Amino acid sequence: MRCLLQIFAKYPEPGKVKTRLIPTLGAQRASELQMALLKDLLMRVHGVVDCELWGDAAADLPHYRCLIRDYSLGFRRQPDGDLGQRMEWAVASGLRRQRIPILVGSDCPLMSAEVIVSMMQVLGQEGVDAAMVPALDGGYVAMGLKIKHHSLFRGIEWGCDSVAGQTLLNMRRSGLVCEVLEPLFDIDTASDLHLLDDLRGAHHQHVIQWKNA
Image 1 (cartoon, rainbow, N blue to C red):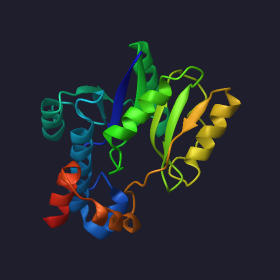
Image 2: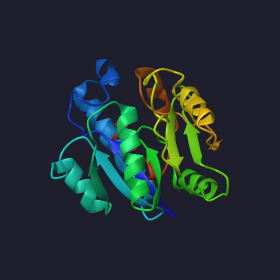
Image 3: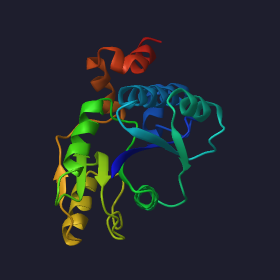
């Protein structure tokens, strides 16, 4: 089966996204950063793997509409429920269409075409059920799955520093084999913002423009 990159991204409405950054950046700048991160991600992976955007609002809203057009994206509306329930739904949706879903957010500036290709190679191996890219803060920035399991994303304390560990424990209990790749940082809190200073080159052009605005 071919892989499908499922990008979870809230609609960038000021005050409703990147809320932990609002005290430092303000609501407008925080929402603009989310959009810059998302555009850079789409630019990096465009043409490498089929992509679809999993949004929390209607596809015809202006920002979503432009992204869908500019990057030839499929679009799915996230269902109600916690993050685990929404991820479980997305995985099931991909597998029903005979695709191997790889779930990512838009918060990791180093999520590159090379990382996605590495995940696809791992997921193509016999005997491997899943691939994870952990985040340095204890979560994870990408998860690929070849099989749906009802308990995989349940009982997780979302937002804590042991999300990756709890998910891997669920996998082991379910008898699933998960390959864990090198961890990457993501941008969640004000203490992460300095990590953007090291970004260079065209693959980060929207974040660089945001920084210089």
